[in-house]
Image (cartoon, rainbow, N blue to C red; front, top):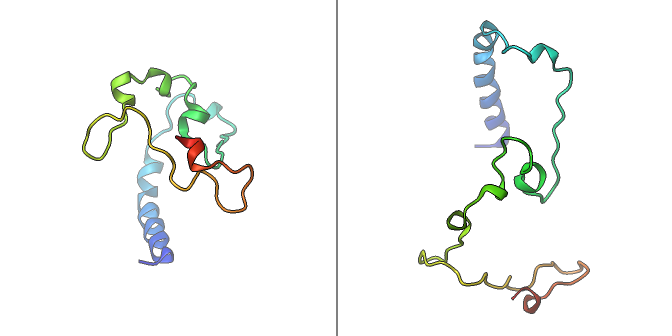
Length: 102
């Protein structure tokens, strides 16, 4: 499906829900909101940006069992594997080689 068809489908589906949304009153306090700011940064994780916000349940609350990284067989990794070929692409400086990631 082309992107245009996909966006058109979402638009039509969303417009069908507009009468339902208008029938519901906004929760108390919503009338006091003047501006909504969306903060995002390329190549940043949710936790990097918002993990410390109240109610975000960021990485600070992760148990050791939840943070354990597994190999393809489901066994815990004793250490993370190297980034094969290095972390940086051609022409990017500073170069981080594969040996520097091990």
